[in-house]
Amino acid sequence: MKNPINVVVALWMLAGATASNGQENKGTITLSGAWAIYPTAVAWGEAFQKINPGVKINVSAGGVGKGVADVNAGLSDIGMVSRDPNPDEVKKGIVPVYVLHDAVFPVVSDKNPVLDDLLKKGIKKETWTAICVNGTVAKWDEATGKKVNRSMNVYTRSDICGAAAVWAAFLGKKQEDLRGIGVDGDPGLLEAVRRDPIGIGYLNFSYVFTREGSLVPGIRLVPIDANNDGVADAGEAYASRADAIKAIHKGIYPATRRNYFFVKGKPQGIVKAFIGFALSNEGAKIVEETRTSLPLSKEERMSALMEIQK
Image (cartoon, rainbow, N blue to C red):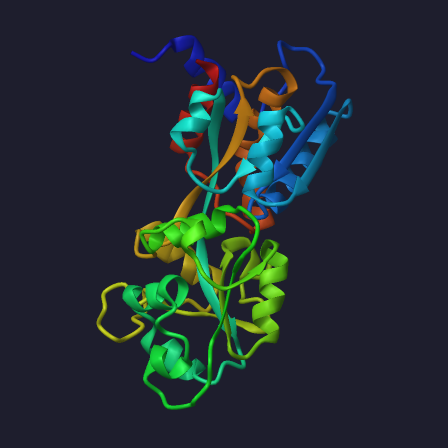
């Protein structure tokens, strides 16, 4: 049976009440980690500071590896982590709080020599493995069957990150199994692919769409031919944020993931208040307005709030 006190407190936090024991929140909160979570965390921080003028929130990106290392070392109050926690991290005292969800998408330049074929046919999972892991597909001719005699530049992340972990997991591998030219961070990988007509890589949801919902200029999403029929069906090809969200919510898109706040030990004081705000109805509204990640459902946010009340 659920603890009725915890339920009441969680409902109170869901509504957006963030003060600790009725007292004014004061102090500094530091967050570091995943590029995917960074834009939303900044927006949450700015909104929280407006209603809590005694609080200062510092947010920095740098990848999942930095977020985990910083929170373990006590350099950050919250690590932003765009992958599931592993058992060792939990054993060491990390408390993961589920705060957002999104996906990772394969991308190419809009100047790619076989772009039309890619958008029509997509790429099968086994071919993705040959490109990103085995290196047995190294030319665009081999990926699409169209004779253009052009090689392929594969880009991957050089930093320890959730995007690489999720993309590798989709292929049944780990980040260290991914091959390619290493690039630090989503912004760097985006620019590398955008400037290279024969390049291919993968990016977080928050870096492939504009705030208005269209694709970032200069790139295209490569459809994953999930049903292996040789055709990029309507549910597999996305030209807008709305199309991608629909596929994610329907469970059609395969490379989806959860995003977390990692805290060393149970969240307390202003850190707990900030996380409560992020999971509140107001926090969900900010996610929708920021448009760089997807908010949790009300039930999921309630469940997460219940966990930090235990």
